[in-house]
Each structure stands twice: as C-alpha cells, then as structure tokens.
Image (cartoon, rainbow, N blue to C red; front, top):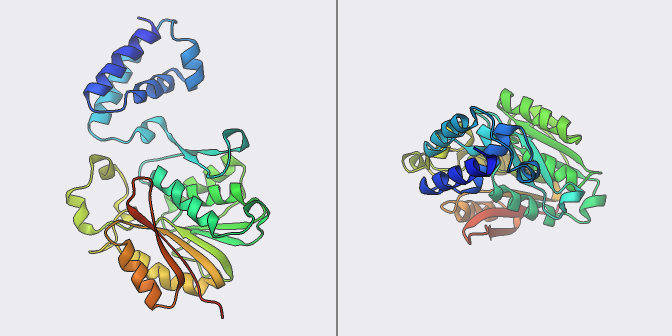
Length: 288
C-alpha cells in the first residue's frame, strides 16, 4: 500500500468519525517522522509496515477525545502581526497535565499588543500570569524583542515546559514558579488566560477537556475566583496607566468588567472572539 492509499483510507475514516480529515495527514506525517510538505512530495512511496496499525490506534484515541496536540507532541501558536518567515508562529512542545494553547488565545495576544505603542521598539515590562506552556509570554517577546518579559506559574511541570519552550524558541523570558504577579512592580502590561470556567461546566465539557489539568480550567462557582483575585494583584503590580488583558468565559466576562469598573479601572472593554462571543476583557489602571 502506498502512503497516498493509506492517507485516503484514513481521511475517509476520520471524516466518518466526525473528525477533520486533515488530521489524518498530520498524523501520517508524524508517524513517518516527516514534515507535512515532505509527506506530500513522497505520497507514492510504499507505506512502511506497522504504520496502518499506528494510525488505527491514534484514530481510536481521537474518537475518545484525546487531544491531537498530545499525540503530535506540539502545538502551533500563531504570533499576531508577523508573517511565517518573520517567525509568525511558535512551535510549542506540549505535555499531559499542562494546558494546551488554543487559537482563541492568539486573539488575546493581539488585543494585548494593541494596548502597547510601537511593539517592536517597546522597552517596557510585560507579564503573563499562569503561563502554562509559555505561549502568551513567548508571543509577546517575539513581537516586543526589546521588552522585559516575565511569566508566572504555580505548576512546576508547566514552569519546566515553558522554560524549555523559551529555550527552543531562542527567546529570553523569565519564567517564575510563583502565583499571580510574584510581587513584581511597575509593569506596563499584564496578560492572562486564567482558569475561568465555572465548576458546573465539568458536567457538559467536551471530552478533550477531561485530559487537561482541571486546575488550569475551573475557578469556583462562577469561574471568577482566580480572575477576581488577579484583578487585585494586577492593580498593585501595574504602573499608573498600565494595561490588563484577560481571556474569560462568555458567561462571566461582563460580570468581571462591571466589577473592574467599580474598583476604579479605566477604559474597561469587552471584546468578542472570532465566533462573535464576548470573551476578552481589557482595562487600564487609573493614572495617579
């Protein structure tokens, strides 16, 4: 059987399972140890023995909701505003137990960068709270190479992974094992994709989330326990006029926006994701 015949077979089976057919191509390339382009150039070569069985096992995992990124071992995170040949995506290693970066968070980075002036020449202090794999912090550093970029995380496994991803990307980000803002001061920008799902959502969450660390997903009855605390820490850590950008849930982003306004934050705005759902909150600390 050629690679093309095997690919066509599994593209059909992935579609029948309700999965994107392109996953079959990505997984076949992964099984062969090839980049996608190299696979496409060699489709008429014979498929090595055992590849069909490996693909069968991965299809079974995907049917059960096991994340594609954990099978591949990496996730691509696009850096807003950069072309591919400018380093427009980060290839981040992912591991079980550490939150997998998602496309919605790329929009958070875009909004955060919009709060800065002249990103590439920006020399201020930026912080990513709850960095996970390091996606936000590394994207900020790639867009703002002259900035001082910090990241905090309370999970030692995530700290180790973020540091490794920074090393692989050749980006200097200080990753700290610490909660919230780690007592940093005079920051220009704080960005966070904190745990924001209500505990009740566990009952209806898609199968993929069962393989994620619940500590990175759920945050009390409203999903706001950690974001509310982060608001208080952010106020102390930001310089006057400093900015905050958060990713939240459609069910609670307006609630936190109202609370931020009452607490004295200025320019409080709720932004929608690409599907039109309210998801992001941006605000500024009042000037002295």
